[in-house]
View 1 (spheres, rainbow, N blue to C red):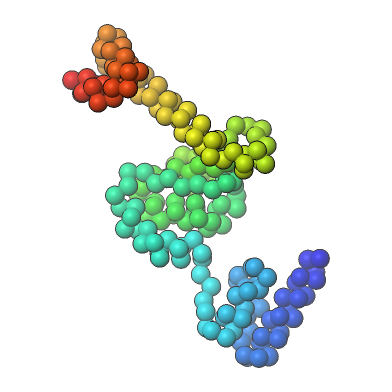
View 2: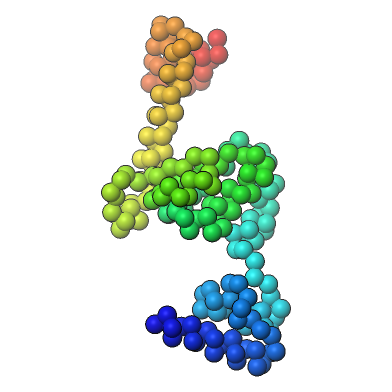
Amino acid sequence: MVIQLENGLKNWADILQKETGKKTAKIAGTGAAGGISMPLLSFFNAAIVPGADFVLSLLNFDEHVKWADVVITGEGKLDAQTLNNKAPFAVSKWAKKQNKPVFAFGGLVEKEAAIAFDRIFCISKKGTDLEYAIKNARQILYDFTFNLHWINIESLLTEVSKVMSNEKLNRVLELINAEKAKEAQILLTK
């Protein structure tokens, strides 16, 4: 099957070259998506550009990331292919130009992708069935962020307990549990 597809693309390139005189077969990216770019290059003088970078430039991403303390990105599966300038990698690359930390979230995560990000998180539990994960993505993401929120609170409280009396810390916890975050914040700053 692959040989038939390759032969078909070669034939397509030969036809286009005969019609336009332009050699497009050896240009990187022309084999993608069934050779759809070859006639665009041949007849309309189009250019092949990295898609993620193109979209980020259209969105004026550089301007939007200036105010961010951290940039969050993600995709269904973060893996070695992510490093082929897929959207999360491009987002990271652009954010790093402005020295912004980048956190990536994925339904599935492989360690090869970690080098592109400051922190990488897998939102699904180990062994989660792919079909289940796709059907329940919203709930899985909610559960993950809810648990992440509590992990951060526990880390914060561990640090706070090093410099705050147990009595004051217990009062802060009471206020948080009573959903009086503003009062807890005021108490923490005293």
